[in-house]
Amino acid sequence: MVNSLHQSVLTKIKTYDEISPILDSFRKEGLKIVQCHGVFDLLHPGHMRHFREAKAQGDVLVVSITQDRFVNKGPGRPAFTESLRLEALASLEDIDYVVLNDAPDAISAIERIKPTIYVKGIEYKNHNEDVTGKISLEAKAVENLGGKIHYTNDIVFSSSSLLNKYFDSQSPEVIDFLNKLKKQFTSDQIIKHIEALFDLKVLVIGDAIIDEYQYAEPLGQSGKGHHMVVRSLEKEIFLGGSLIIANHIAQFSSQVTLVTALGRNCPFINFIQQNLDPKVDRKITYLEDTTTLIKKRYVHKDGKTLTKLFETYSGQDELLNQSETDRIIKFLATNGSKYDLVLSCDFGNGFTNPQMIDAICDVPAHLALNTQTNSGNRGFNVVTNYKRADFISLNEPELRLAAHNKTSSLEGIAADICQVMNCPFISITRGIKGVSCYSMDGTHFSLPALVTNSVDRIGAGDSYLSLAAMCSAKKYPPLLSSFIGSLAAAISVQMIGNQEPIKKDALCKFAIRLLK
Image (cartoon, rainbow, N blue to C red; front, side, top):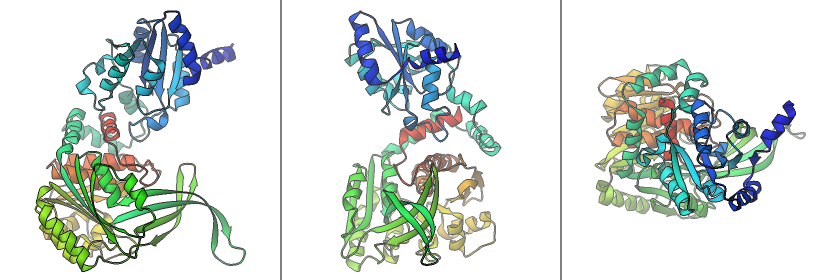
C-alpha cells in the first residue's frame, strides 16, 4: 500500500516535455489550467490554504518550483532539496502536477505551462513592494498569453521566518547581532539603502588579476624523487582584483569606471572583455611585452570541499613606465571630481606607484582603500603608503603590518591608523571571526560572520570591500555599511572563486531572510 501511494505521488512529477501534451489535451476539453510558482522550501498551513484556493479557480493545478541552484535566499537555502520539495508538493491532494523549472525566474515556466489563471499570494498584489521586480514581469507574461492573475487572500506565513526560528543553526552571536540590528533597521529600510546605491558614480582603480583554478588529483610521491605528483583535471578561469570589484559594483551602481592595466600579451584579454559587465567604462592601459598577472591555484576538489595544494604567479611584474603613469595621473586630475567614490584596490602587483598613489589621494571624492598583502609583496604594500582615506578595509595581518605591531590590541592599532590617515572608519575582516570596525571618534563594534561554513574564501574580502565602500560613500552608519558588506562576503564564500559578481537580488533576499 505504501509503495502504491509513493508511485501515485511520483506520477504527478513531470518534466516540461511530459506535461505539455497533457495540458494541451485538457485545454481541448475546455478545462482551465491554474499555475502556482515558487520555492516552497518549507510547506506550512499558509501554503495548504493557498493551493486550495488556487485549485478552486480552475480545473487543473500545476505547481512549478525553482531549482536549487536558482534559489537566491542566501547561504543554506533551500533547506530542502528540489527532489524533496517536488515529492512533498506532489503528495498534496489539491495539486495535480509538479514541475521543476530550469530557469532562474518564473517567466519561462509561465510560457510553457500557459496558465488560464496564475495564482500568487496577497503579499505580491502591490508590485512596488516586490524587491526583485519580477511579479510585474510575471503578470505581463500571463496577460500576453491571454490568462489572468489571481491573488489569494488568506493567512500569510513566511517560510524564511519559520526556517530562521526552527531550522537555522545560526550561532548565538549571529542571533544576538540580528536582534540588535532589527531594533535599528527594518528589512525594508535596508533594501531602500541598497537600492539608493544606484546613483553613485564610482571609479575603481587597481591591479587586474586572472584567477585560474587547476583542479588536480593527488597521486602521491614521485617514484623517481621526493616531490609530490598530481593528475591535472579540468580548470576554471575567473576575473580577479579590480576586474571583479568593478563587476560587483556594477550590479548596484549605474556608473562605474575601471582604471587598470593589462599585458598586451595576455592570453585572457578576450575573456576579460567578454566577462566585464557592459556597464563598466573601461580605461585600460595596455603594457607591452608582458601579460596580466595570473594567479594559478592547484586545487583538489572533493565534492564541495576544496583543498589548495600550491599556487603560482606569472605575468606582470614590472611597474608602469613614466609615460603610462603620467597618462593615468592626467585622467585622475581631469576626471576625478566627477566621481562620488574612488575605490583603490591596491594588490601590490606593480600597477600603483608613489606618484599614482599621491594622485589618487588628491582626488576630492570619497576615498576607499584596500592594500593587500600577498606572497609577492609581504611587508611592502601597506595602507600607510597613502596619505589619507575615508574608508579602509583590511584583514588583521594587513593592519598589523601597516602599524608594524604584532601584539597590541586591534582597537589601539586601528585608532593609530585612523589618526595617521585621518580616516573616520576602518573595517578589519577576520574570516570566521567576522568583522571588527573602528571609528576615529573611538567607538568600535564587531559583527559575527553571518555564515561559518564555506566553499571557498577567495574573493570574500573583495565582496565586502565593494559593498561596504559604496555604503560608506553614501554616509550610511558604519553598522549598516558593515552589515551590507558582510552579506556580500557571506554570499561570496558559498561559490568557488569569483564565479559571478554579487547580485543585488540575491543580496536583498538574503537580508530579508535574515531579518524575518
